[in-house]
Image (cartoon, rainbow, N blue to C red; front, side, top):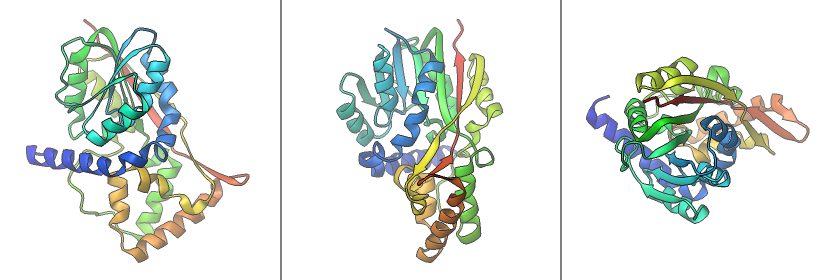
Length: 274
């Protein structure tokens, strides 16, 4: 990706998240919230820790860190998300900022966390280096990322319905592979290359819970950017077939009167030494 492509992808992400900011917390936020406590625990967030919530969205991680007694700052590229976070978590400080150029001094934080934000950065490698800079010695960086379709029944189900009935070549700006950092080796390489020691990964369960199988695509339509744009690029006829196919596949995940489809996440962490 060239400089112009990076900027196109950054604008695409910013504009896409601006469109869903007001409804994110009540829809997709309920899914990502399942990984909040495991991520904060892995990051070692504790009383008095100076925590930066990177790509903070509506402030889910910030709220969890505050509950642990931390002093919390959140940043996001999307002003509409910052507005939502300020309204929901008034005890934290929130600022609009680019993750590649954080407006903080070296060693300003004890912990940096990023909940499912790494796939939205055009250059996650540069972000990891910047995170390393703003962490104090001994500070910890922890992030979550979605596991790729081969490890995710939910993503596999949707992907197969799209392959059968739709198109996968939606006109999106070039970006990094969306599930690359949900792979253990890639996540560890990102940390090590940025200078982090003690790299560690762990898978955590996240479940897409639905009362109606026909809502199986709702998490992607209500809380995604690339995934939502791919679905919106389908013809009405193709999208109807994708919906029907995915709903049929969801039947195998029925639990009583509900549907519970696994969509696991990976949590990766590292420590800044020296």
